[in-house]
Picture 1 (tube, helix red, strand yellow):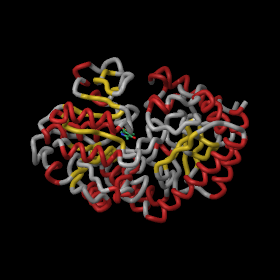
Picture 2 (spheres, helix red, strand yellow; picture 1 turned 30 degrees about the horizontal axis):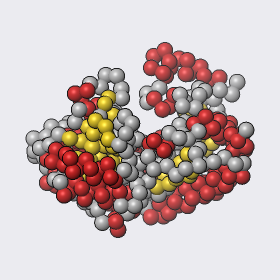
Picture 3 (cartoon, helix red, strand yellow; picture 1 turned 90 degrees about the horizontal axis):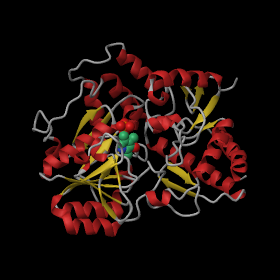
Length: 431
Ligand SMILES: *Cc1c(COP(=O)(O)O)cnc(C)c1O
């Protein structure tokens, strides 16, 4: 009875939607079983169609930073959605959100809104190529930047590989100007700039990677990227779609500002839409004014800067103050330390890694610095742990390669419940 309704929905869904899902990770392929069909969220909890309640550590993969259905976000959305959902003309709402972003992230003077992180990255790359008059794009293995063709590449083995498509349908032509190197591999990056520095338009990196599990940059790695780019006339694109406004008021970059490096283009998404489809890229005015209609780099979107999405984003950001970030840091530490202790007590080897309030567990004894390291983990043990947590009322991201997301609505009681679920789940996973 318990999961019959989700099961029934999934059967129905699979007839009309590939795999039953609108984004692949939701299908539970990495952990097995049937995905749960969610119908409601409130604060730190979500409910599935079967009537079960879970403490939510997915948080829509980041956007639900203040918890589900926050009264202030709902009120703002209701106020604006009554006036219209979209005009296809400029509106005050997007201006207010843009001002809030510019206020929070010092190097950003202007932003352009789009509807997804994928689009924000795609436009940044176009902009970087136009600004430099160069073609080559450098990305790191295991960093995710959305699903546009030029970025959907993985490295083969070895230190440095010419980009090869990792999805059918992406042509070799679309990725021939993308070079992929291992994350945190400073010598490989230095060598690449020695051999091809004059051809490189941009290096793109996640500010602190959280799409292969959480793999923070080694000390000095982001600074090295910035220095090499700037010495060689290339741009650094800092992808903060995940970390932006989640780690601190200004994102990852602001949280490490004392390191003394500055990227040229930022991308934002997830938190800035407050659960609605909204993302952005931002940079100084001279780069941003290359975009049409001021400049000649074309970019557009029917729903870009949508009034309701902009309003939800602004209402969310207004709740993201110092008090919220310090609460999120505390929650992340309580959970990562507490769960780590439960895993230790049953002898499960693991590495708990964090970047600000983002954290994840790798079921491997080694510290993970790259995607190759991340792949060493015991994904079967994670799947067992995942399902045991779900059975005990805790919804984790359904993959061992994803960050876990805390939110501002989590209570002390939620933390206790998660830790007691983790105790039982660790015992089950240890067997
Ligand atoms: C989620 C994510 C994206 C893609 O954003 P979508 O809105 O899913 O297209 C890009 N970069 C990073 C770092 C992300 O975490």
